[in-house]
Amino acid sequence: MRRREKWILLGIVLAALLLPINLSSAQVAVTDYKTNPQSFMSGDHGLLEVNIGNTGGGGLFSRRGAEVEKVYLESDEIECDQGYSNLGELSSEGMKLSFPIGVPKGLKDGTYFLKLCIIVRGGDEIKFPIPIEIDNSTVEILEKDIPESVSLKGSEEIKLLVVNNRPNPIYSVRVKPVGKFDFMPKEILLSSTTIEEEGLEKEKKSEGLLSQFEDLSKQYSEMLGGAKKEEKIIGLGPHESREITFSVAPRTKGEQEIEFIVQYKNGGNLHEEIFKKTVKAEDKEEVRIVFVEHPEPVPPGEEAKIEMEVINGRSGKIDAVSVIPTTKDAFPSEAFIGAMEPNDAFPISFKIDTDNLKEGTEKIGFKVRYKSGENYYESRDYTIDLNLLPAQTEVGYGYSLIPIFLIIFVVLGILMRRRK
Image 1 (spheres, rainbow, N blue to C red):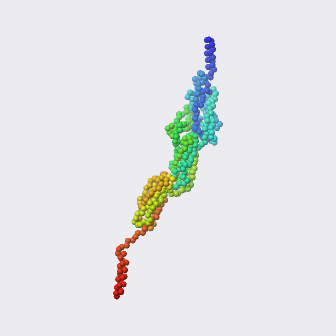
Image 2: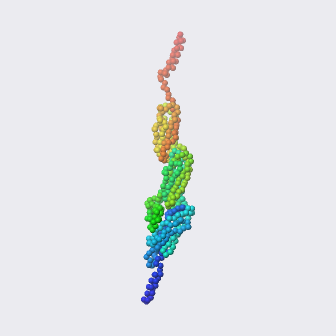
Image 3: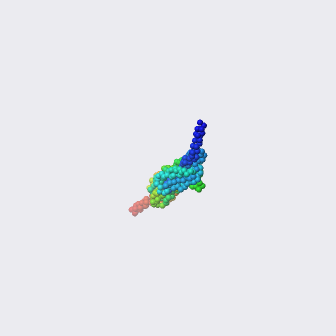
């Protein structure tokens, strides 16, 4: 029985010796990966970050992880020239590697695959397919409310819609208007209304990267990290849209073209789209005076009351509205209204002192002064004809008796002649 036990024990030892000391191929696997940007556009460059993990033990007597000799990428469509050599032992924590990749211009939408090739000590080669999403959807500007014509006096509001048609967040979204107009504001930087979880937490610099790739890691650190979780993305989330408003004031008369340029980053790649709109600048009075009532005619020495309405015919609000008479003898010297909403009408009255006015027809003028945007404007001179009656001459009492005395003298003269 002892002899049999010895043979069994010897068999166990021999079987253990025949087991592989290090099953390297069974230890290595891609445990996680991500790309930035999440979805590429043709012509984009970005970063692929891969986590390689130690997923299992080696042979029975193995105390070491797999020895990784080389890691590189292969692809027929995606540009991927970088690889790593002599990376050493794969620890239980694994290793994180970053690869710069590029998408050729003109590449169509779809899913393309990279092959991550890992060569371990002993010549074993493991290949993992990694999908790369290509989506050439852009960010566009849509017209929401743009007037066909604007007044040379004042400014108008233009409302636009900025739409992210992409399936991933975009960053550094700026809209800048260009044209022969004064714009307020000069530029709009968009912030997302939602908090994106993915890609917002800062990450430490990848361990195991060779020194020659440190500058590249810094270049893409913003793409991989982004802002802190409690901060908003300076951009737009997937399929998010935002309404923006510009105030425009034309500089010259006639039809003028406005360009709205939207710039944004997909990862670290700058893209640009342009929206164009033609707007006609006209010399038209939209803030005007309408005379309601005035006396006709006016006796000399009496005050004349002129009633009017100030109408804001503009599509936007105006501020600091006042009416100024252009005639010296009108009072008050200025009537203040303040702010007026679109289509508002405000009644005002002035009194005219006629003591210093000549008889006949006098023109009485008024102007509207107002603020639109950052500029002040004046309307044309609105005039009204005021008819003044001539002054009556006073007749004395003595002069009124002269005709009577003349008649009496004539009658007396006739009587005296008859007596003779």
